[in-house]
Structures are given as C-alpha cells and as structure tokens.
Amino acid sequence: MKLFFTCLSVIFLSAFSSKDYPVATIYAFRQKINKGANFASPEKNKPSTVYQVFIEVKKERRITLTSVWINGKKISFETKEVNTPVTYERSTKLNVKAKAEQEILIPATKNNLLQVILNDSDEQISISPAYKNYTLLIAYKERSKLYYIGRKTWNELPPQVMQ
Image (cartoon, rainbow, N blue to C red; front, side, top):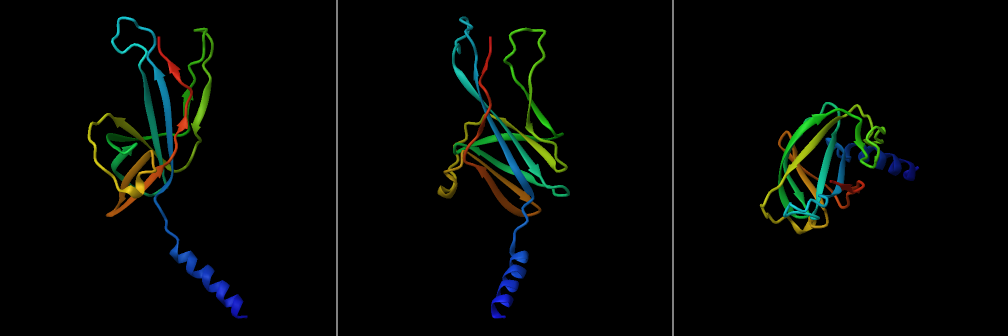
C-alpha cells in the first residue's frame, strides 16, 4: 500500500514539475555551395556554406529571438513567419525542361514556424563553456524568461554547384 501511494505521489508531482517550453523543435540545415569555374572571378572554386534555420513555436505562444551563435560566432539575424510545409528544390536536373525534384524539409504543422534569416557578422562574443558543444545555439525570450535551444549537428543538404 505504501508503494502504491509513493508511485501515485511521484506521478502527481511530476505532472506539476514538467517544464512547458514554447519551442517545439528546431530545424537546422547546412548546404555547401561551389561557385563554379568562373575564371574571371577572384573567388573561383571557393566553396561557401549556406545555413537555413527554422524554429517551430507551439501554437498560441510568442517568442522573441535575442541571439544566434554558429560555431561560437555571434550572428546577426532577422526572423519571419513562414507557412508549412517547407520544401527544397534539388538542382540535379540537366535538362531545362525536366521537372525539378521537390523534397519536404519540414512537414506541415499547426504550430507557428519562424525562419531565422542569418546575416554575416564579425562579432566574436564568447559563450559559456557549457554551450561550446553546440554548433547552433539560439537564445530567445517568452515574456521576460530567457531560454536557450541548440543543435549539435546540422542536417546536410546536397551540395549545389553554380555555373
């Protein structure tokens, strides 16, 4: 009988102690871009990386992003709300008349989806050693409470070759 009441009280207390975070999930994509063989360009054959970040916010919740770090480097950003599903067009077609392949990156959801548009920044602001393992770290606020969410890895998109 004691065991029964102990289990019941643990279940009851755990229902009140669970945190309800406003962010459901974070989607992080990385794509390598090869600029092609334009011999007149000083940047020929220099690959670059494009990052795409989306945050799924639970319905009826509102957040404000305060900071974004990629590999420990603080990045300036803008946000905009986008519709789901989010698709990606593969650029593997050799025939111009061929229909491009569409891949769903983010499935349809009833939650709100924010796209984080990243701008380059030279700011080197150190972050806490506790967050050094994250390749992507985002700080956001809901009302006056500060939260952090991060990703240790990126979802890789196929490389894109420009001509």
